[in-house]
Picture 1 (cartoon, rainbow, N blue to C red):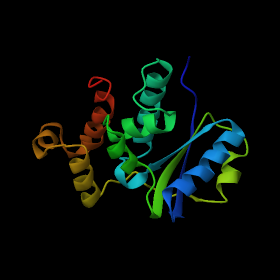
Picture 2 (cartoon, helix red, strand yellow; picture 1 turned 90 degrees about the vertical axis):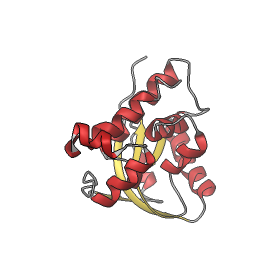
Picture 3 (cartoon, rainbow, N blue to C red; picture 1 turned 90 degrees about the horizontal axis):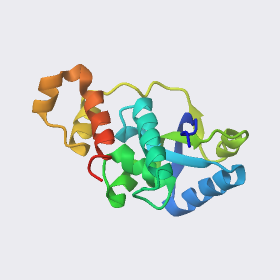
Picture 4 (cartoon, rainbow, N blue to C red; picture 1 turned 45 degrees about the horizontal axis):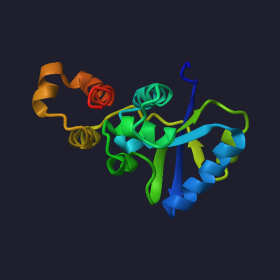
Length: 171
């Protein structure tokens, strides 16, 4: 089975309590027979990171050997580059203000409009990795200064994406 296309949006929203917010999002997904996955933009290198996590998760899920009980958690596991659901959960939403990539897989008419009831879609440049974010990502993905020195600062994003891909090896 081929991996589905996914619409990936950027959104900001406030969460009072994770479970009730996710139940609302799950209801919208179920209503439209799709999956909605929310990724914390501050823990990702950008849209390519989301796409890579989705691609690997779908391959794992349809290959019959998923790590998680849902495709949504499987995608977060790959985004985090870990087999630990407790760690991967930090790559999703959190109480307070969220900046998130919203993946809708497969795309479904009307989903964006329904999601607009609980998120505000934005069209901002979230691709830049400033020094503070680079430091946070290096810590999250255990990227050493030596690794960055070897490949060069301009390839930092590739080091993170390598961690996403390496989850397949660590299975």
